[in-house]
Amino acid sequence: MGNKNKTISFRVSQEKFETLRDIAEERDISLSAVFRDYVDMLVAHDGQVEVVPEHEVGESESTTESFPPKVEVPKSFVREHERLELEADHLREQLEEHKRYVTKLRQQLDQNDDEDVVQLEDLDGDDEEETSYRIGSFEDA
Image (cartoon, rainbow, N blue to C red):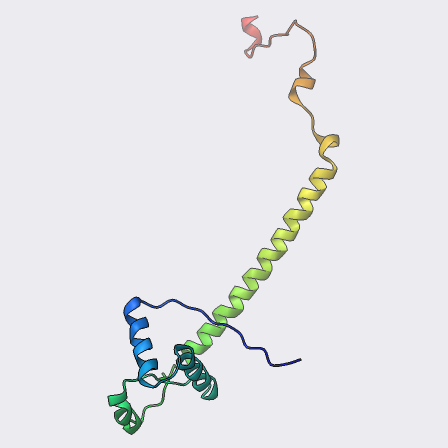
């Protein structure tokens, strides 16, 4: 199987588009070539490409900082983050277990739906005479 090219599309403002077109014309290449070159450079340097204006190229090389910038994080922060990730995984597992249990109960309810349900109207009966009951003591009678 051959190496197939893929198309990437995105939107830029009219002003930035015109600037990019000017850059392409200045270098006597197509606008697509500008993007292909950038993507090739990005891939070749494992995503560590810094885009700077031409007049700052010499300045950025003299700095000792690497790009992208790196930040040192305390081990306690990393441990807390890992603990929270484990807790979140555990909660997700509990949620899935609860969902399975609820689904099982719903299925059981659907299977036994007609058998166990007693309608209150069925208990009333068809008699028009209703016996009235009164709560009270025997002395009132």
